[in-house]
Image 1: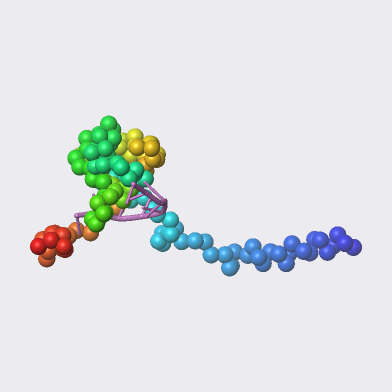
Image 2: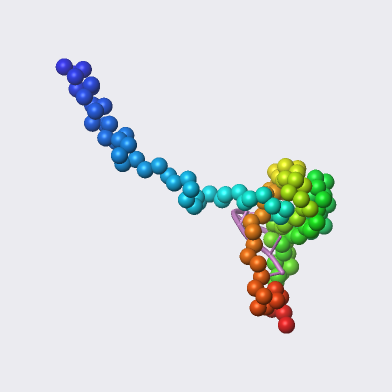
Length: 135
DNA sequence: CCTGAGCGC
């Protein structure tokens, strides 16, 4: 009957769900998604307005912790803001408060994103850390 | 003046 044929169908489909060919994605390997950097006093702030200055960053983030240094990255040639910057707090706890206080908030009409900055490669002692265009 | 993802000299 037709009922027998229906009962035999799932058995052939079972090969598609077989665990022998199923390979789970490696979690420990490098993922294409951007992993959050480890906690540090350095904060990476993105989504800044083109008109936001380092002073504006310092003032805005000082409300949630003691800011040691704030810098808005600007283009060396044009001198205009690249739309992101960095904020350094005196401690990790202040940095955490700064993220929770400023991440996803508005600054100069733009939604900014605050997160821990990635470790930057140290300058080589060859050029004494001086800019390549200077002399 | 400024395009809008993105990691600084």
